[in-house]
Amino acid sequence: MGCLRDHVWLWGQTPGSHHASGFYNLPGTNRMTPAEGCRYFGISNCCRVAMTAGPFPPFDEETRALAGLDRVVWSLVGAGGVTRNEEEGGDLEEVIRQAKMFPNVIGGVMDDFLLTERRRAIFTPEVLRRMRKRFDEGVGRKMEMWTVYYEREFGIPVEEYLEVFDVITFWTWYGENILKLEENLERAFAAAPGKRFLAGCYMWDYGNGRPLTPELMEMQLEIYRKYMHAGKLDGIILCSNCIADVGIPEVQQTRQWLVEHGDETLG
Image (cartoon, rainbow, N blue to C red; front, side, top):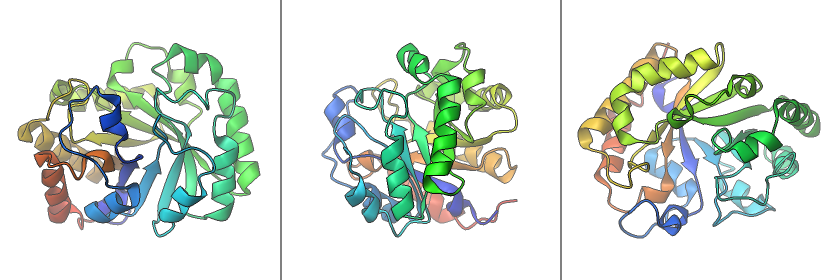
């Protein structure tokens, strides 16, 4: 299984895109790119996800910047405000093109997918299965399909959708819900038995537009560490380079946690 650090990913997005939304009350000015974010945290895996601020196809320049990483997953459908790829396939053909040029592109992820009725109606399980088939055939090797799944989506009947994906990434949008993180992780596992899971690791309370407390940050990191050692989580995804250079203490806390625990052997 390797060491813990090998299973840590960055949720890589265009610099300034989180500040541009105006919803999150973030401090400072963000200029750090996804590639710089990976170097900053000392990790070699990145989910490169589109926001309304970009990137826009073609993705060649962005993928080239990540060519030195071990693994890259590109967004097939971007964040909630991105509507240009809300049709069957999304950015699939562009991601296929990237994967044929760059062998470290190993899959595609659908962001903010299950949350919106509009997207669930476009990307039905049947459509997702067609996308999976096209993905593998287009690249000429087995590709992974990932999705985002939030605790705020509990109660929406999404099991039929989850069944199609290779990897489920589970995210806790509201900081206070870290207090019941273990319960919610088990609930997510039950919704998609046998699937690989990664956990999204926010370093800011995006749901409430305020900082996470150091105590909640520590609780989150240690629960993820425990679940990774137990083999229940395949890894975590840090969100993100878009806040890593703006002076948030929980970013430094996470970086120090990686220094202390990143070389631990899993399994």
